[in-house]
Structures are given as C-alpha cells and as structure tokens.
Image (tube, rainbow over all chains, first blue to last red; front, side, top):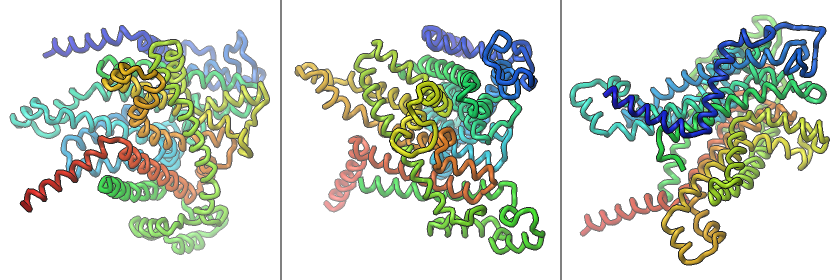
Length: 284
Length: 323
C-alpha cells in the first residue's frame, strides 16, 4: 500500500518536473519562502526604521528600492512584507480550505437536506463578490492582521466546499467506500480516512491557486484601509500609503506591486502544473 | 424549460433571503452604537437610550431582522445616520456608476478575450498562443488596483493623455475598465481556448474540414456555437468579479460609485449604509447569475433536452397508464 502511494507520488513528481513553467513557479516560490524566513538577515534596515534625513529618496546603492515619506527603506519593507503576505495567504487559505472541505465533504456524503442547507449557504456567500464580502466581514470585526485573515478565510470557504462536494459525489458510491461502511466504519471515519485521501488532488490544486487569490484579497483589503494597519509592512498597505506620491515618487508604488505579482504568478504557475500533473486528462 | 426556469427562480429566493440574514447578522454584531453615532458624544445616556428605543435597537435579534426584512421588501433600507437621507436613495444615486463600470468591463473583456481565446486554440503552441497565455497568466496574477495605478503612471503621469480621476466622459472609462477587466480577460481567454480546443477535436469539425469548408467558416459557423456554451457561465461569475473590481478601482480613480461610498461609510462607522450597499450588490449579482444560468440552459441543448426528455417520459408513462 505504502509502495503504491510512493509510486503515485513519484509519477506526479515526474509529470510536474516535465512542466518547465511549473518548475519555474516552484523555484520562485521556494526563493520567496526563503526570503520570508530569512527576512531579518536579508533586509538591510528594520522595516519601521524612520530616517528623516533620507525621506523620499530615489533608488540608489544605499536604498535599492528607495525610501518612503517617513524615510523607511522600501526594500526592507518589501522583504518583511513577504513574511506578512505569505502568512496571511497560507494561514487564511488553510483555515478556509479546512472548513470548506469539511462542509463540502459532509454535503456530498450525506446528501438530502444537509446538502441543500450547506450548498445554499455557499450560494449565499458566492452571490456576494469576494472583496465586498471581505469588506463586510472586516467592517464587522474591525481592521487588523488577524481580522483580515478571518475575512479572507471566510471568503475562500465556498470554493472549497463546492470542489470537495463535487469530488465526494464522484467517490462516495465506489466499492471501497461501501466496503468500509459494510465493515462498520462510522461516518466520520469514512469521510476522513477513506474519502479525503482520495479527493486530495482537487483540494491541493484549489489550495495552490487559492493562496494567490488570498494574497491579492488581503492586499486589496489593506489597500482600502480595512486590513493590515501601518506600520506593518503588508504590500497592499504599502501601496495604499504610496499612491499619494505616484506623480513624483512613482518607485514607491512599483516595488510592492511587483512583489505581489511575482508571488501570485509563481503560485499560479505551480497550481496549473500541479493540476496537469495530478490529473493529466485535464491537460489540453 | 419552463420547469427549469421555475426551479431556478425558486432556488434563488432562499438564497436572497439568506443574503439579507447574513448581511443583517454581520452588521448587527458590529461594535458601536448607532444611537450614540447619531446623537454624538455630547448626548446624555438617557437621550441615547430614548433614541435606541425609538429606532427599535432594544428589540430582540429576530424582531429587528423581521422589521429590517419588511423594510427591504418595500425598498426601505433604513436611514443614513450621517446625512439623514434614505439609504436606498443614496445607494441608487451611486449604483448606476458602479454598474456602468462593471458592465463596460465585462463587455470589454468579452471583446478582447473571446477572439484571443479562439486564435490561441486554432493556432495552439504558436507565438500568438504563447503571448496570449503569458498575458493571461500575468492578468490573473496582478492585483487590479496595482494595474490601475500603473496605468495612471503610464497614461496620466508619463504621457499625460488620460485623466487620472473622476468619471465625466468616455475617456474617463478607459483606465478603470482596463484595470477591472484584466483578470476577467485572462480567465475568459483561457476558458475560451480550452473549450475551443475540445470542440475542434470533435468528429463533426473533422467532417466539415473533409467537406472542404474554409477554416473561418468552420470556426464561426460550427465550432464557436458549441465552444461558447461553457464560456457563458464564466461570464456570469466574472460579472460578480467585475463588481468587486469596480468597488476597489473606484477608490483608485476617486470615482463616486457604490464601492467608494461603502468604504467611506465603513470608515465613518455608518453601518446602515454598509448594510444597504452590500445587500444591493449581492442582490444584483444574484439576479445576474440567475439570468446567466437561464441563458445557459436555453443555449445548451443538453440541459434543454434533459427537461424535454423528462416531460416526454412522463407523457409516455401517462399514455401507458391510460392504456
């Protein structure tokens, strides 16, 4: 059994390795994660160090990305921002994925009124644009890092619930599920031990692509002033503060945006590659 | 088809009711006392309490929700605590601007993305296909508000050819629409490409080619009709995305739409306005998705035949029973 699983993983890895774009995404992502981990070592200055003699300095050898209106080094803030944005993206997505997947599996497995209630609830969440839903949640909870994560997590629940429900429906009538029920396995055991391991592929793909969406959603919230608050170096909050200076110090709006784009691009490339590797039938 | 339409409308009703409950619940639990907000810090506790009683804020959650729902059904979304105007009027004043932006973005996305997706599929792995896919990847990866800022930088600051804020004429739409639609263009291009690739590998396309029809005729007359069916559902979802995009981009371009109104209301803790704004956006998105679903069922012969078939089977059974 273990050998079979290892064999499957090896096959997936082999297919993924053949996809050059996915490998580029993976390498960029590993570098970004390393930047987040070693931010203290890489950043030349503390993210909140205000140097009033060097306010609004253009990029130079002393300040690679220049300085902002408080004289803070933008490069250091972008580096520390990697930590904040990845944290928001991964934590909120994990919570959203967990809750959404459980709801989706319950809906698909039990069917009937349970399915109707859960799916109508996801319809309700999906009828509101993600950013408007996140704005409404953030306005209820107030601004801040944790509240932004909660808002983003809740917004990502319906996508996972739908994907997992659809996958559960395809496996729940399989013979191995019937066999598990026949030997007396309880509902929670069937869902967590037999259904989940067999529907992991779509969850992984959805999660990889979802982290990028979560990072953009959190950045949008902060950009609107409803997410992470200053002086935390979150990329969206940095863009929000910098847009006033777009006419004369446009470098301030360039680098945080590039950081978001490169991170999300890496996640999208990897997500697309994983989808093809996990289900080659989907590939055109 | 009538059965499908009725069924789909019946499903939409609890969803819309659920939206009202969700929006009401979220704002009900928001910190802050509306009565104190109206009267200000100088009011005495007795005055605040009297106003709370008058506004029904001391009623139970259920009573308040029923009263709110009753108002919503009559088009009454409450009163703006700051201006004293009905929220429905304030929302309607700004809704048109947001909807114009969202609709213009969706139309622009379709004009760009559908031909791009078709060309990508027909010339799969060519330079055009690769460029389109790279642009689509970038479009899906950048936040729309940052793209909007970059457009301002290039077209307003560097070239000075487009206005950076407001919405006073056609040229004011160019940058917000590009900013809002970038993600949708990416998604619709990819969807059209993959749907088109699936269709052009079908036997009936090969038959058309064997009959000697031109490539243009095969694509426009035979392939496109079927390839666009799944694209329709994506357009419905993209409308919701475009409304969300408009909400954020209104902030970038200082456009006095519903999005800017909402964000300003949250900052002013004007929650009655937030409640009304979110509810109206949700209702409009639900209705658009309902229409798209009905349209999808109308153009997709598989759904149509499914319902026609069940009617036919029923008729056959009835005839058998009668016989």
